Image 1 (spheres, one colour):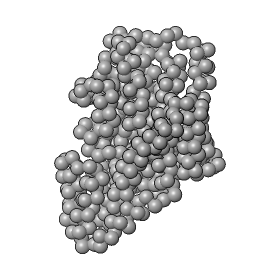
Image 2 (cartoon, helix red, strand yellow):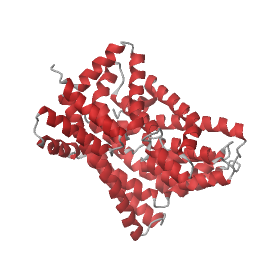
Image 3 (cartoon, helix red, strand yellow):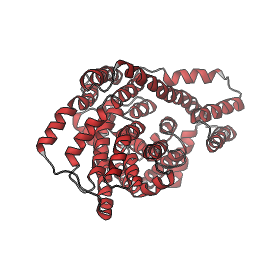
Length: 432
């Protein structure tokens, strides 16, 4: 295997320099790939070919549909219904509003699939409510941004679709099923951290638990939660593909938002679709440009080189698994989620498989690693959104988030070393 070290250096060094200079990630990926191809004297038509190839997939069409579904339901009056349901479930506990925030994120994540949408939608409602009830603003913001990462694990998550494509077309239905228990464990971990802090700071409890109120809120929220049932069980049951389920979910969310919850009129629908286009353009540009970068990595044999380096560092599977997590966490500090999945999956997945990690389990690991990256400076998008929504300085939010980083790392380690957490539902339901 001939290794062109200089071409690899041109690709990676130019990319890192542009990242440090705060280039947009899509430009950094595309330009570093361009420099690499030019250095090797390869035809630049490869750029167009790989960009088209990156998004020319029927399964990839699920991503725009899932994003559109999240936008419609996020602005269609769903947030208030899910907050009320979460309050009926856990609002009676010490630090009740923090618990409501975490549980509402679990419910809302199953609809939006986006940590950013969760933070913007729920945060704009819950952070002022928490502050009004006596919670510190930095704590309220920290709870909001960390719990938003549950939405990355709880299906339907468009990031899981991106991973499935990057991993060579593994079962999207299995990935969807695999996310439920890890998402619940992350929620429980964050609730334990919130409870400890709430006890220490004497944060208030909510109203006493009422089964009647819970059943009433379940009835009200049924139409929102049914969207998840349509998508997940439709795909797992083989009724339709992920792309078909996503298209049906868009139509369903439109009906629910306009005619049942009446949170949107048709004028509001068009405004929501306009904002969707902005998000979609960013995601699809990232996917297409990352495809060029991935092509350069593959032709330069970088995945094999990286595998040899990591395995050469240690033959201990525990050390290798920890090293994979560390690499992903570091990447999360400097890159956005989609390009990490697209670039790192072909490199790290074969290494993970060599130590017995299932591709489904690895998908959950990489999604949570990237989710933690969304909360870390200097590129943490959700950190910036939370700071803006909560009107709290970013430095203050980071400090308040430190205990929750520990909760998330503990969850990550559990997912890394206990495969049954991720694999139980796929194996049980035979979706794998």
